[in-house]
Image (cartoon, rainbow, N blue to C red; front, side, top):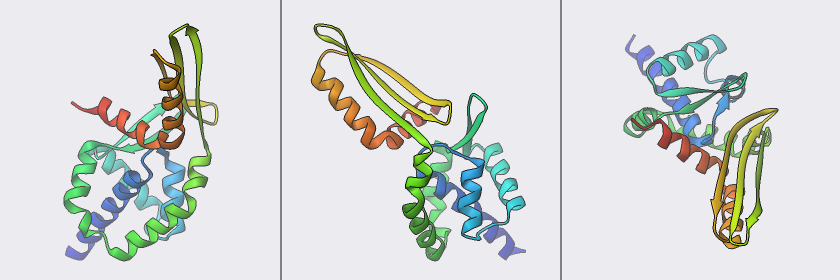
Amino acid sequence: MFENTLELAENKLLLLYIFKKIKFPISNNQITEVILENDFINYFTLQQYLNELLSSNFIKQIDSQSNHKFIITKKGIKVLSLFGNRISKDKIDILDSYIDEHFNDIKSKISVNANYTTKHKNSFMVNLKISESNSTLMNLKLNVDSKKTAQKLCEKWEKNFSEIYYKIVELLMED
């Protein structure tokens, strides 16, 4: 029984690790694909673990129109930082390799847009957007006072959208 408890804890930590590593919300189908392709957990147990992580507030479900996605919470990050060393090195290596290899596939389903328009002589409207299929995950509109700032915001968004998105969501979820 003690061994089953350790395996259960490791599997939940493994799920938290995946959410933290990917850094942007992913669908149930995407997390299921990662887990099943690496033969870590069976489908039904995975769904049970996801529900338990949700009810414990270690992950949060984000709804954007009819699309449900999961993202790790601060509480989940804290638990992972405290107990993440209980995940076997072999599983971490397998996951790191898998995510590195498939990250672009996961990310490709997401459309990233960054542009700006001139409002007045010294006023620029920057539009930063992330979409998946026909669903908007985030749309930020910022008014800035220089073309250089507008260009820099667009460049940074295109290069680091997942980290920026993750940080914004994390800040908004703080108590």
